[in-house]
Image (cartoon, rainbow, N blue to C red; front, side, top):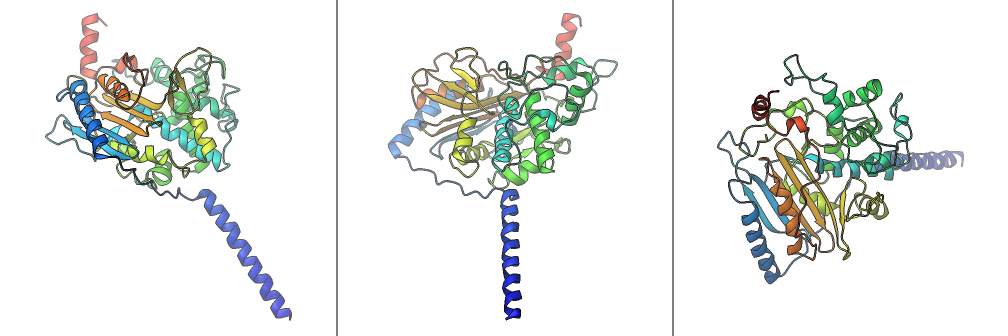
Amino acid sequence: MKRLYWLTLLTVVIVACNLSSSKQKSADDSLQYYPPTPEAISKDEFRKYYRDLVAHFDTLLPKGEFNGGILIAKSGAVIYEKYQGKADLRRSDTMSSQTAMHIASTSKTFTAIAVLRLVQEGKLYLTDTISQFFPGFPYSGITVQMLLCHRSGLPNYLYFMSNEKWDKGPDGKWNRKYARNEDVLKMLISKKPDATGKPNGRFNYCNTNYVLLALIIEKISGKSYPEYMQQKWFGPLKMNNSFVFTLKDTLTATPSFTTTGTWWNLDFLDATYGDKNIFSTPQDLLKWDQALYTDQLLRPTLLDSAFAPCSFEKPSIHNYGLGWRLQLLPNGKKVIYHFGKWHGNNAAFARLTDEKVTIIILGNKFTRRIYSAAQLAYDIFGDYQQQKVPESDEIDSLKTTLLAPKEQQKKNKKSGK
């Protein structure tokens, strides 16, 4: 009888331990993801959209001007896909569906969803203050949510890092010392550059917010941001050509070029991530888009909060959620999107959720027409009133590096600088 008692007790203990271990594993395990099946569209519908898209992009992004990839899908089914030009204009290679390009600020959508996933896992709260993660952080009252929706009031590191001139040699040229996320944090703490506003006072698009969010992800996960994104997101979503750029990728990552085709060299801000530095392809970004239509990444209420406007100081159809730009039109139409630019890279990523349409354009030869081509394409699928398209409101590039180094030097020489 005693033997039976102890055997039963041992069995209960083993089962309890296994359950406990299983719970812990489920909280920390990689995303288990199963992609949705694309919905079929009729031949007539496909042909109509295809003809309209061919005419649209042949006109707005003609050969010679546009260098990159375009993918348009409806309900997950690709209805238009085109790759044009060369991956490296200095060589004879060809742009293909596997050519990963820098997606600039579209990277913020990944950082934001990764942060919300940590919230869902109970490892983080939107109301957590930044000083909880970084002792000595001199800006009080700023929360994780304020970083996500650009309401922190923090200064933009793209400007204050440059103003400090720690990155330049005596001749005024960029040296090979690269700023990293940790350097941005150290300078915020040591130099205390002036804030642009009060915490939660107003919307102010600021790349510093997402550099800090990447550091928070690293602190909570115990992994580097590039490693975490690969293991937790790109791998499970089968985004096989996507990665976070680090300096070890310098010789292999797809380069970018100016409008005239001049190679755009790296500068001292090319080692920071979270706000930028994800490389991807149109096909991989479609996988990202489709995953956002499921509840496998985030529970619906949390995902909906990412696509809800956060700023109401000024009446406008333009707003920002948690990592996503929004267009909220008077007729009830809504566009969830994020564009970006960095050096010669342009990215346009838009989701028309009413029609389940995805518009993706990536280019590595600078042209602003990528943004207008994406926005004007909305009206092919619905009444999005995009007759007049404003210039892209992305501000990822330093004013001093909007030209490639050689072109900038020529400009300075002419102006007597």
